Image (cartoon, rainbow, N blue to C red; front, side, top):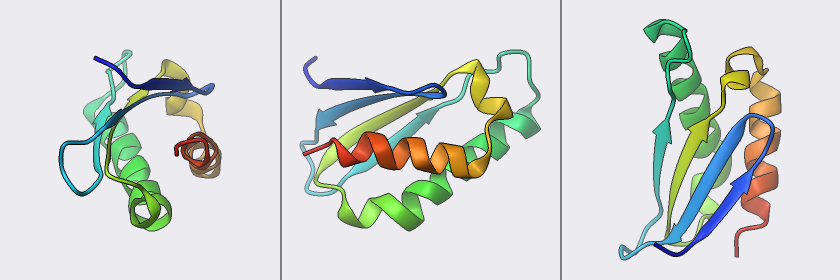
Length: 91
């Protein structure tokens, strides 16, 4: 498997060229001792950031976004900044 791996304080993003003609995004949010409600909140936040700020400008790539334990205490704006920072490096 070839591609890039970019990391921030709260996220680990894997990027690979997509065989499709559109971008695809997947999320991995491990439990880390938190409830399903907390995990779903994180997934909803990340999906919203991708949908509103990033999806329209992405090239046809596959993204897998994995959360670190610190994501449960991160603010929405922090996650948005980190994702925008990572994806600004994607060409």
